[in-house]
Image (cartoon, rainbow, N blue to C red; front, side, top):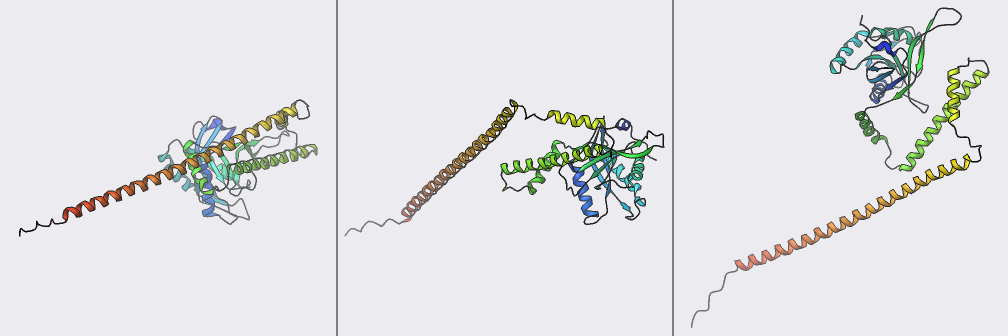
Length: 328
């Protein structure tokens, strides 16, 4: 049995999981190759480092996996393949170690705890990242979990469950450049910057609306005694509401409106200046092209005239001189 990786015990209660774009692309490619247009799910291994309370997932590889759709407890994962691939990746980059595993979800399954126990052969506290390859909601398509022991207050036996931890998408500079090149093929070049900004704001508002709906549903379930009140969640919600501006105060409402108008005026002036500069550059470019064409035409005419003169001189030199008239 493989020994646990030293230093991973510090990630027992991580505060954040960072997933790199390369991992997302690999998972999507894995799904399209194996389980596209089907209900099967794909499973793979996550590689990276543990830095304090942050798990950095930088790479991954696919693993042969099968499970019974009718009986979730019946599944097969080729751990010998995992051993071989882990050793190969270690030769390429010794810093990347097994930190957990992934599947395409989109939700947790009944056999996830059993599969998670298998990955404890490679790391003491494996992270499970559920990556939704068909995200329908706005936001990050990843959810990270760690297996924990849920201790009950009534003295009953502890049960194992998954604890959700925050996750985000992070990238190195080289990865950001690669992602930008990929997005160039997807982005519509005919769409202007203003339309792009509006689309981004609309997406942000949709995400905000979904989060507010989740908050409303949670608070309603707490009021209906369907869920216990969590003081930490209530405190976070109170901090969020405290950050909102109070528009009911007469002095702050005009100030907020004035600040917003100033921001939009700055955006408008910047767009106008950029358009004028672009038009100015276009005119200068046309003038330079016209000047270059005139110079090329003048040079061509001069070369043709010079060549004609050389031909005339050569013809004159080649004409024989008539001998002097013989003396009578």
